Length: 192
Length: 162
Image (cartoon, rainbow over all chains, first blue to last red; front, side, top):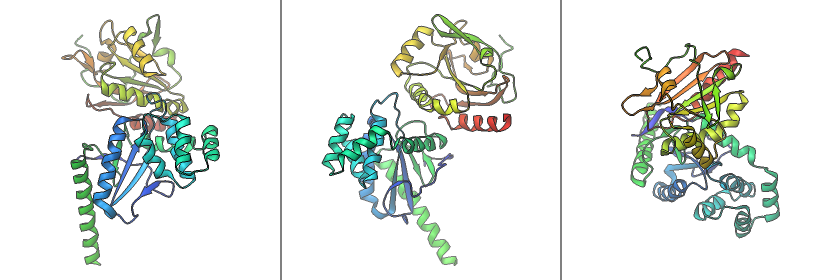
C-alpha cells in the first residue's frame, strides 16, 4: 500500500481542525488542499463519495495549502472558508468553493456567504482585515513540515498516502487501514 | 574531469564556490552570500511539471526560509533567458542560476550531474554561514522532495549557531 512511513504528520488532529465524521472512527483522512487547484476539485468529489461509502468508519479533516503564486484566488478562498467557519458554516463554504472553482474572487465569496445565510458584513470585514490569514498559514506550514509537496496531499492515520487518489485505490487503502485498526482494537479487547 | 565526485557531496564538506548567471546581465557567487545560510536546489529543467511544483512550493515557503535568514538558489542547466521566462511565468521570487556554460559544471562539482541525460539530479544542499555543507539530499528525479528536510536542516543549524 502506498503509505509513506517516512512522512509523518507533525500537527495531530485537534480542536482547531475542521472535522467530519466521528472521533471514534478507526481511520482519519486528512487532506491538505487548495480551493483553486483543479486536482483538489476532482479529489473533492472522490472524498465525498468515499465518505458516503465508509460512513462512520471515516473521519475527514481538511487543512489549507494554498499555492498563492500559482493560484491568485487560493488565499482569499481559504480565508473565506475560515470566515464562514467562524459563523459555523465551514463545510458548506468548503463545498461551495470547490463546486464554483472558477469564481473565487472576493465579490463571489461575498455572494456565497449571502447564499449560506451568513452575516455578510462580518464575513467581508474579516476578509478585508485578514482575520484568518494566520490560521491559513499555520495549516500551510504544518503541511510543509509534514512533507506536503503539492496538492491535494493526503494523510491516513498520520502518515502520508502517496498512492493514486482515484476512488478505488484510495478507498482500498482506507478500508485496509480501518480493518487493521478494528482487528487491533479487538485483540487488545480480548487480552484485557 | 575525472576528479569530480560521483555522489552528492555529504554534510561536513566545504561547499565548492561558483559564480553563475542569475540573469542575462548579472552573475551571483556563492561566496558573496557568506554569513548567511544558503539553500541550493538543483533541479533537472525549467518547465517540467514536477520542477514547477517544487519551485512553486519553495516560492510559498520563502518567508519561512527568510526567518532563518537563508537564501534560496535554484540551479539547472537551462540558460538565463529560459530562467527569466520561467521565473516570470511562475512568479518566482528567488534567483534561478544558469549552470549552462560550461554545461553542468557546478552540478558536477557537487556530485549531482546525470551524464546520460545531461541534466542535474533533483538535489538539495543546505550550506551554513561559513560555507560548509550541513545537509544534502538527492530525491528520485520525478519526486518533488518538499521542503521539510530543508526546514529541519535550517532549524538544527540555527540551534548550533545561536
